[in-house]
Length: 194
Image 1 (tube, rainbow, N blue to C red):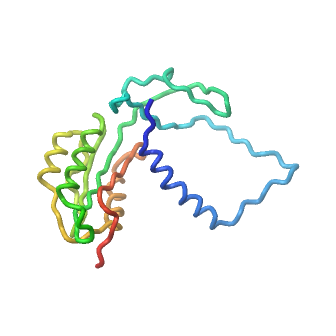
Image 2 (cartoon, one colour):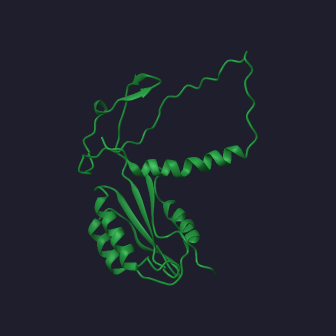
Image 3 (spheres, helix red, strand yellow):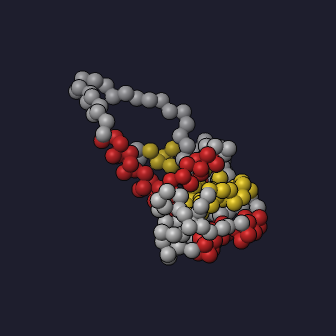
């Protein structure tokens, strides 16, 4: 089984933010030696798992017997497994006045190569941010339509709107299920001055 590097990257990116926000809050009261620890009964724990072959192909035939889940040294029984299709939103920065190494052609090529690697059965949408923020294509599972729209509907501009495009992406996700949503930003993360 291959480790999903994107999830590790996301965790290493977000975890320091939790640590920083937690350190700004008042400390919790420490239990005295006579207090018993609080125990919480948990009926269900959700784990996200991605399985790939050594060649990077998605494995759709994963079964509970293929996994070993261990908690505090004790193997746990897997009661159920389901495949949850992903909702992948590509956020493409096509405004280029701040970074001369960035180009519309390179952004398009990167997005097209990425779409080729997304397994069948997942939904993809794309937004572009340049002088304005707009939808390139709405949620679809047709890779052919995605590739065609990336060729025909991307436009360049001279303004970058990273902050506003993130806010627009959050709005775009409101129509999707909370499970298995992914935002992929292709750009330099800079904002132009107003």
